[in-house]
Image (cartoon, rainbow, N blue to C red; front, side):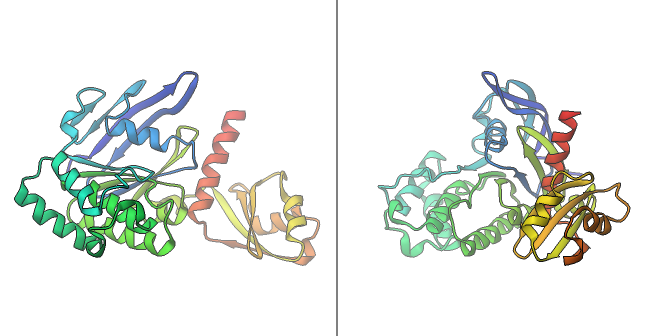
Length: 312
């Protein structure tokens, strides 16, 4: 059995009175895409910065590629790649100039640099933009440049902080195909996102909320083991029906998705569809059906459960 690329125990970061990351434990296996799923302010970026050695934890410790943190993070620099949330390369330099600059930082020889840059331009479909200023690239092209720079030195572990937040769906899909290619080539990847469809692509995810880890596991297992039932409601007057359901006993959450309501019902309810139908005053005008959970249902259940436990 191979050693995990990351093991974190009780890792915590406070900024004055605010706790950004609160006693998080992690174990991330080699050869996986591991996702941090959560809204803005949930602690994803802070956690990532602690695992790269950029930020010192207030408490706890982590072992990243055999390097103990906090401590001497220098040995990590040649083994990890980090793609920041916003484009951080020089906009007044060309694509090729940016990549050459990164190659110099990582100490590639002239021969290594020439071969590697040609390879990266081709892999990331940037050959035609090689002499174009980075500031004039489209969002998808800037994303591909940032990824090329992050993997230039062939890191064993790649950190990607919300890498697709500013690109179109087609570019996002192509980007994820490149990530799986990197895993096939031996890399391990940690990616933060607030997109449910991206989180479902990960081998394993941690759901983060207010700095705490609320759930952890492969997305299919998290959906299968959801501690709630999901009922879809169709019919007229959905907005009125939703307002009637909100706050009723056994109803965890309601959300309108197009012409349907998606209702989370406590697992203890024996007949969730009947319970939803009876809970609304417009029961004669709706159809209720138990459906399979999705990852958004898991996220809502995990975060609502934390709120209920905190109030108890």
